[in-house]
Image 1 (tube, rainbow, N blue to C red):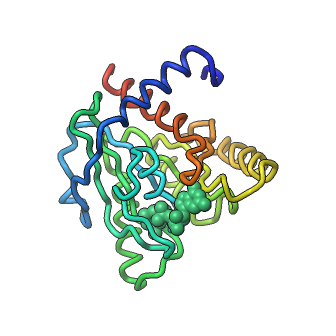
Image 2: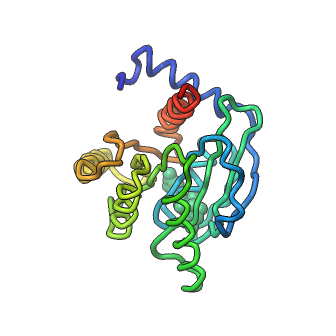
Image 3: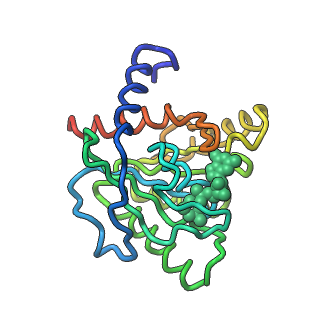
Amino acid sequence: MAAAGAPDEDEAIEQGRRLFEAPWGFLKGVVDLAHLPAADRPEVAFAGRSNVGKSSLINALVRQSDLARTSNTPGRTQEINYFLCRTATPSFYLVDMPGYGFAKAPKPKVEAWTALVKDYLRGRATLARVYVLIDSRHGIKEVDRTILAMLDEAAVSYQAVLTKADKISVTALAQCRSATAKALEQHPAAFPEVLVTSSETGAGIDTLRAAIWRLVAERRAT
Ligand code: GTP
Ligand code: MG
């Protein structure tokens, strides 16, 4: 991939900015796979442990503070939520998911949505990429490994995104990034580059928009 500041990367950043320029809206929340929207365009999904910052990252991408609902309490997002921008070209869905792992919600409920997330991740043909969010303070946890192994098994393309980069030192962040990249070398479906973001400061958001643009533009070309 071109280095930051190289013409290709500058172009992708500009295209990514445009892709998220117009307002995004909530399309629907899904609690069972039978009610997923028609698989008529690519989709980009955000997965990760409860409270890792999935909904906040979507809000940062679209520059709308309240598109996806966020909370201090793990377990805020309890449905697979679809977002759409009717004028974005190429057209694609953003998909926010319930978190896996610890959540402050009744156990049967958590088990039901974890099963839903797994079934969705394994079976959605139009899923262009899963961004697997990892809290930069904690790195990859056991529950993440289970999901990564499942994505490898299902051959679903995924990329790790470190979140909450504003909460740790530059040194600790660099260590987490290289440890995560090293761990991912063992995972065949993982994209090798690890993205680093902060929804609070906006760090890394333009790079993520550019990556999403590349992805959906490629899908359209095939
Ligand atoms: P669930 O839907 O419960 O799985 O959580 P989620 O992964 O969607 O997390 P959410 O976006 O709701 O964020 C959880 C908490 O982390 C909220 O209090 C956010 O304000 C905070 N948060 C998210 N991203 C960042 C970030 O980049 N920096 C900081 N400092 N806080 C963040
Ligand atoms: Mg959420």
